[in-house]
Length: 274
Image (cartoon, rainbow, N blue to C red; front, side):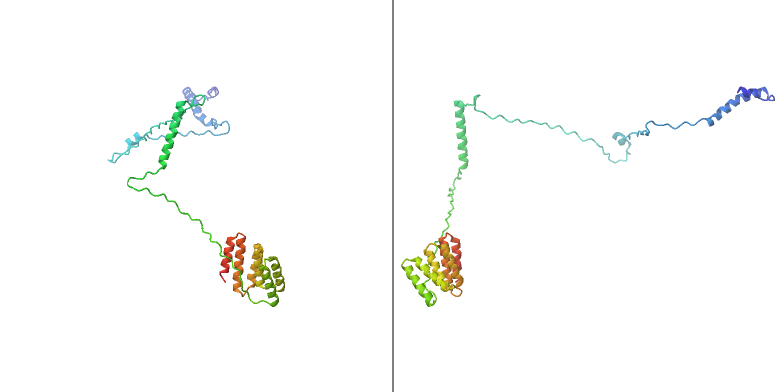
C-alpha cells in the first residue's frame, strides 16, 4: 500500500488520492476470494467410511390416530390390549407316609400284632365275598356248567384174517408150498421159512410166495420184514385184486405191530380200493 501511495502520479488531486486509497483495499479484499486455496476433502482415519445414523421412525399413538379420523358418522374401532392371564398356582402334593406297626427295633407289640391280624382277616373276608355271586331274590341259581369232554374213542383194529385161497401154482412150487404149510402146522416156522425161500428162488416173480413169506415173518415177530415182503407181493399181483387187498391188510397188521396206527389206517384205506 505504501508503494502504491508513493508512486501515484502527481496529476491526481489530493482528494482523489484519498478516495483511491480507500477503495483500493476494498477491491483487493473482494478479489481475494478467487485466489484462496480450496478446503481439502476430509480424510477419514482407518480407511473406512462412517456409518450414517438413520433416525428411528416415529409412529403416531392410538390417541393421535383416533383424533385424526374424520367424523363421518361411522363407527370407530378401538384397539385394546389383551388382559393378562392370572398366574396359575401350583400345589405340591406330598405322599402320605405309610402306617408302620414296628418299633425302633423292628418288632411288633402284642396290641399291634392283634390289629394287624384283624386287618388281614377283614381283607380276606372281603375278597371271599367279592368272589361269591349272590343270586337276586326270586331267581333260581343257575346250575354250574361242566363241559362234557369225552375222550376220543379209539376203535380196535379189525382182526387180521390171512388169505387161504390162492391161484394155481406150478407142480414144483406147489409141492414146496404144501411142505411149508405142514411145517407151519407142526410149529416149525424156521423150516417153513426156508422152504418158501427155496420156492422164491425157483419163481422170483410169484406174488403168492412173497405173501406166504410175509405171513411167516409176522409169526416170527418181525413186522418190518413182513411189511417189505407184503409191499412186494402187492406190486407183483397186478391182476389178482384179492391178493392185492390182503397184501395191504398184511401191511396194516405189520404197522400195528410197529405202533404206527396212522400208517395202518392208511394201509387199510388202500386195501378198500380193491
